[in-house]
Length: 105
Image (cartoon, rainbow, N blue to C red):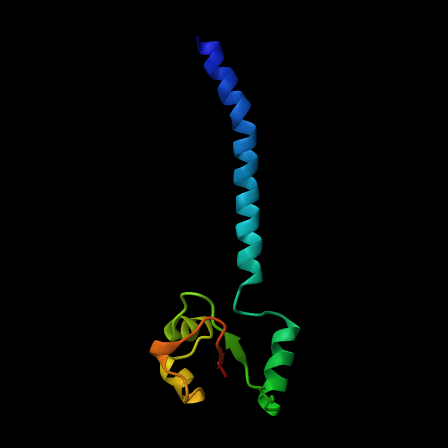
């Protein structure tokens, strides 16, 4: 009876260890890609160029998906509902339609 249990543990231990290792690797790579503090020469170059020039920002638009609210869009684009309403004076938050295009910046 003990031999059957050992065979099951041996059979499932390797794939479980492999999946755990892959999950950890993915999480490490993902956290490295999403780190918010750049380091090295690129950080100093970016800081000096953005301080001396003002970039021209084109208006951005977003098409609404099913079930989205104006607050969902505000969260997605890191802004406020008030800002979105100021950019879109003709929209009514209670009458949004799927596929409707709204200005987000």
